[in-house]
Image (cartoon, rainbow, N blue to C red; front, side):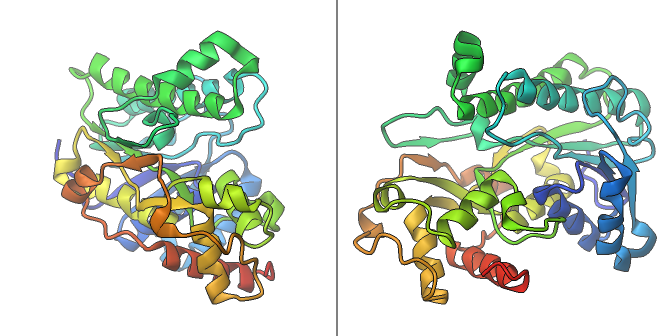
Length: 342
């Protein structure tokens, strides 16, 4: 399928932490954007945020993404779709609380695109490295060929007793797999192609509506509590981490995934690199000495990163020069300062 370089993009869950930046990235590239939110109460903030783009931005209501036909109206007349809406939290009791909206939301928007959006040429789905990695005590470099079968197995075996992270990871894995299976099943009927982005932990400043740190999304709240409030002990700071990407780079990845011809049909990991929590704490303390110093004996050159991601595919297909950990830290803290959270 040809890449999409102009026209209108539908962004689902447009009031989310990642999605608001995705909307901005498309608008900045000259696209028009139709964003979906669950209720009218979520719309005024977005309309005001993007008012400088005039009639290039509109909001529509999709109350329940799990309902059949939920996106039937929203997809009409758009040229591309960025599906970002999926729950991310670790509070689910029953795994279905995460799995049902993740899977049904994804397949639902694809069904709507097939039935009601002949103008659509490309669909980008925001998956996660949660669908790629398999937790292990040994260091491993994961690539787009890897799938997280372990979390699905744990959820199937243990149900409600499965670890909270496993429930979330299973939801992302099953939703992404459902997207690829839908495309394979309907390849003779669809007039669009699929691109999937797999980010690791997403950090960085905020555009979405949030009134206090306690109401930040999961990853951002963890970052705030660790870096600003100093809630993690020295051993955790030095030994616990993963990989990350700046939310603004991930938003750019969505725009490039639609405009780059060679991204067609690809699964792309978007990781800026690994971290231990102390790396962020140290970067923040250098900028704001009043913030916690954390583990002062930590030596980043001796850190062992257990979860790494192969960068070659992203470099070849999207070519993003990722923001450094220091830049992400600086800009996030400046955002906190403006909000009075420092």
